Length: 349
Image 1 (cartoon, rainbow, N blue to C red):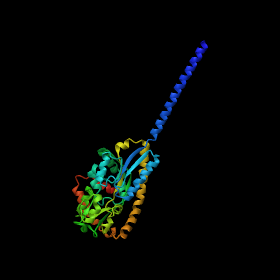
Image 2: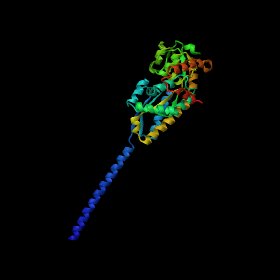
Image 3: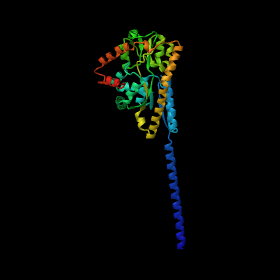
Image 4: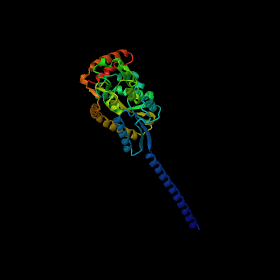
């Protein structure tokens, strides 16, 4: 009798052990499934551009493709690079500050907002002599400080480890410009940038800011008679159709940045941050390799389209510099950071 009772107890105990073991295995399996799902969660985000340069748009598409490939699809950029969200830089920059999207390819407008006293000087015509000079600026303590100010004021992170260098800016007009006297009174479109506006006003030009999307029509109808931009932008907007002369002034060197909404960026894993950094490095390196090659091709194209090209050797560049630099330094001696002009020039030595 005792043996039978013992056997029944052993059978019950085995059943309990089996149940507990089965539940434990199910729990482990569920945890594994949840862990797998979490590790394979797809993070979708918006990458936005303003479509002002075909080359920069291509670079952004490359960056997006590299991000998706290196993350095995766990990061999925949704692209708005060709004007789908508009082409007004002020609106696009406001969008990333307000968190409407996560990444923005744009020029220096956000820095203009965050550090106007620095950026008015930065945007002075003829302050940089080359792409290399510009790159040294962003690699210097000055560039790092500006990026930190932007982050603090607007919660937007600028990626400055790599920048997308643009070709130098050229002057176009419906007449030849050989020196500063030729531009006096000329209705000139510039971007709505204080440093750029001040530079050209110092030459005697009649500066008229016009938004990028309205520039072609403004030139076509005579609202403005001249403008200045990199060759890639001139090509993208077809401005060679409404301007007869192209002057190789090379008066300003600028670049594109990749910006992040910092709330989103800080929520990424270290692995995902590294993937995005590597993608930007690769995409911008490709962009920079193409810039000068493309500029040579565009010069040939514009000549074929009938534009009259005036090379730098035929332009009195110094006449522009003499009007712009001393005047702006004097007018802004209390607002420009002390010694900043000299520090920027020293980078080129």
